[in-house]
Image 1 (cartoon, one colour):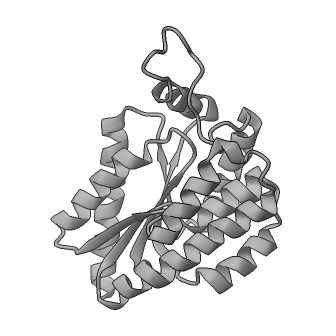
Image 2 (cartoon, one colour):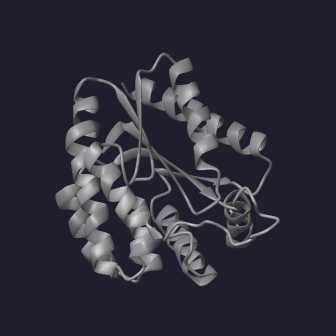
Length: 222
């Protein structure tokens, strides 16, 4: 486990981008040198995989291929960015990490959890010290996603421009949410669940408060 790796998780429409900015600002307020990244992505190879995975044109990708693509991008991210940053004494803040595969490819796609765990041990052995899980009802999250995905001429065409994952049925995201909550329940020392259904200022404040407590705890241990 690396206490200097902090991850942000949550389903669609949870507001991760907004919270990520607030968490980054708070870490820097504490005098911490932080590298911010995302999954899939974070490296040139990972960003290419991201485009492939999210492209609606690839609707026929099987669950096994999706899982392997996610871990291919993740393995590169760990070796090219995360491990070097941690080795230099910096912190890393990541928008999604391995928990996302347990939620999306495990809960959502039905891939065996032991298969994901084996890939995790081999490809992404760095474990976060803190994971903030932004949790909200699926219907509320998807309403946000579909609202922001409306094209500029929405009055003429109300069909949302969604990526391949966002286009999944609601039942898929219910399984994703359940898997995330199960992960958090199984590891309460690492996870902090934040109610993302509240107003954005309240969500940001809750996340910042958790970061303050975590940084204080890490510095006491150090």
